[in-house]
Image 1: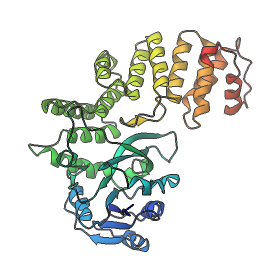
Image 2: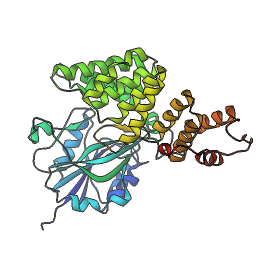
Image 3: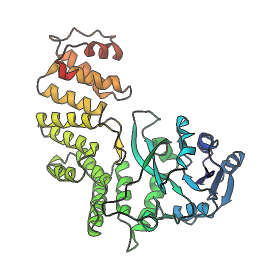
Image 4: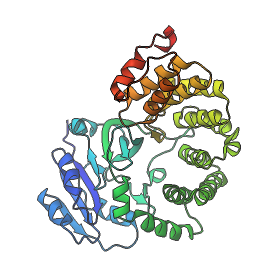
Length: 401
């Protein structure tokens, strides 16, 4: 068997706080590290060189693709793995990479775990399959000045029913969406400026409106976000392309956040005909039905979410919508329907699955305090674990066990 080499390609600027962790997670399995620095003024370059990286300077020209492609041109490996400085390879997956290099595929996706919130927590992530491994020397390059992507359509033959990209069992943890990171790097101002410049181009990509919408959404400027996500959907349709599923996910998240429930129903039913395997959209349907006081229908929807689970990485999925969050809302529906013991059990099951999702614990405590004829009175010092354990011992019909 011929030995195949793996090149790690990255672009960096002022990443001294995280680049060491990134390179430590991957250095043992890559054959070369190609770093393109776009103007660091801290210790980033020094740290990269300490890992044996080849560091090249590239004057920033407001194009992430140009910087990445500059690095690709200098990579000699048979395969390219690209990462960002605020990412780390899962330690237990490191050595799986060597076997993957002998795949017959030309392009592979990994499991990207994106953390959000104030600190990294395993239950505060959104997960997706992301193309990060590709064969070198066959024409792959990055396109788009910001939110760059590979020129897959130019390199690979796309079947009529769409390209299916294999996802390999490699996890990469991404910390770039953490609140402190986005604030410190002023990503909103930088990204929005670049995206609005791209929007001025007559042939701008339909994704540009989506990325602008995402920026406004993260700042809770929902009206602007809604306008741009609708523009993105229209732009894809004008190209006779089905709008990607995450556009609709963003659209219905905005409608729910703004209380525009009548605008969300029954439109989401049509979207689910396009993406029946997307658990997030089913979860949003359940929320919409719940807010419309259609508790029986909402209950069925959340039960369907639990049946679906969260393993489908072809769609951007928030952790919990096929597990603990769906269980919590199932409990909410059961409580509204007067099935108190079943509701308490669902709240407890939801709380036992996540230590950071507080809503079911709060709901359980309120429910047991209100229904003291069904539950033994709570003591003031009753901690969460005792509360959950007490609720889990409630005798229920077999279908709820």
